[in-house]
Amino acid sequence: MKNVLVICTGNSCRSIMAEALINALGLGQYSAQSAGSKPTGYVHPKSIETLRRHGIAVTAPRSKSWDEFEGQGFDLLITVCDQAAGESCPAFLGEHKKLHWSTPDPAQAKGSDEEINAAFDDAFNQLKSRIENELL
Image (cartoon, rainbow, N blue to C red; front, side, top):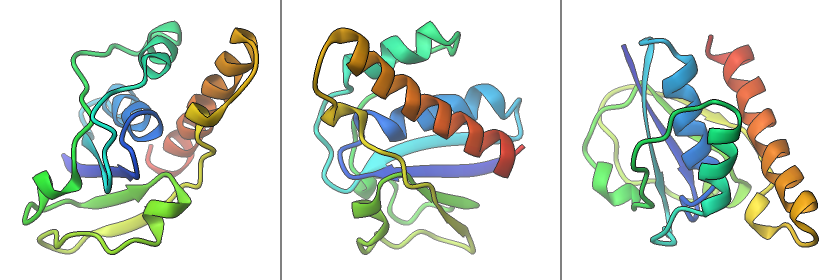
């Protein structure tokens, strides 16, 4: 099983969704965690709602710092926001591959409920597509 760390700045939306998707779609091939460089300290409720709406099981995700994983070994580090991709990560043990999946932040969406849901669905679908095409 390959260990994956998905990194974003706030660890409230995109990285949370990517973690759940990798664990659900990876069928035991991957064990994913997520973290942020500057975690918000909360998981955006629309992230959970979006995952559930698409049939992805969600247990108890939490927004956490990438510092919690310093010194641990990962096979793959994935950044899902441009800001985190340019930051210096803590030291992670072992050889690991790095991927960058630039994904617009749905938490920044404005407008009606339908427009905000559409932004979360777009992020979900982009992440799902990357996972299916690049990991599976």
